[in-house]
Image (tube, rainbow, N blue to C red; front, top):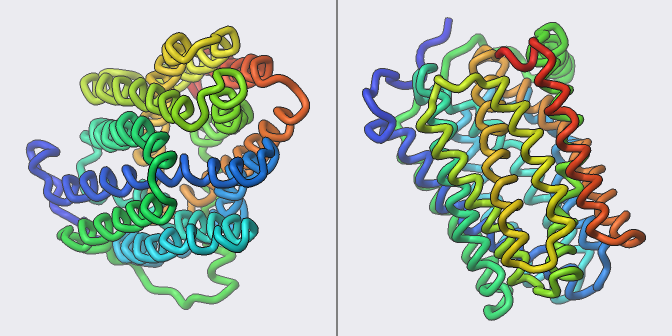
Length: 406
């Protein structure tokens, strides 16, 4: 027997203390993340001037999801999600704080730290998505996801815009120190939540039981026609989306000749678009069909990315980047809400872990491929290819009822 984790009768999300604490902690933590996500590639590129090495840094950050995602999901379903999140925040704070010191003597050490930081995040990210249905009612999931996304993209709009300049003007120790402090704040906010983990029958932690639980998650995904079709759609689009990340950095450096400042502004524009798209999704709530938002959003995002290739100035390129961000908000919010509503509580960790493993495997390969191809081909044509690869699954999904009508 399971019991409700928290009281789910709050008349409005802003009165739900647990949700407000989750939102606030994540907002502060993500401000620091924006600094790190600019500082990491600039640290590598500044030392090596290699597109491949820079792309490899992005890929290393996603590799732990490939290796540990499914196993982490099985562990998450056994543990108190809030405790896992607090432990992950504190561990990441210590690891981030070490980056500038390690960078002084070993770039290989920087890659190793990035891998460890992301390995800890493998446990945190599925927990954040899995715990939300324990904090809010099912009817408010779309708006709750939209508000979380709004906060995240607000930090992108502000954080990335500032990060390019901060990374340039401030010492590395200061930048990574700020990021470490934000993880501590996030942990404190989580500890302040009034949350009781759902009760479930305890089973012995053995390799056999863990393997069985992992297979249960995979089996549920395979047998649920809607979730399986949705996963195929997302994986296909990620082939293009993953390549865009290193290409954006290289476009700012090579085509616009703007360095980290231009990269920060481009990422801020993406975040601004995501922010507007998140607000729109929050306003629409359950009035928008999730499947339509997913598929049409992917088509629009891919189409916008293809136009980046013809832009020759920062003032122009921010427009299609903004549109892509808005479309991405509709896609991600709808996918998260659909998953949370379709998966039972006792399987959320395993399903999110399995999903992350599949998607991040493709994402890591795509990020690495984007960086490698940019070492051989011009960046602009690669943007066109990545945009088309992103758009096609969305266009196909519009004609598949199992995907479109959820």
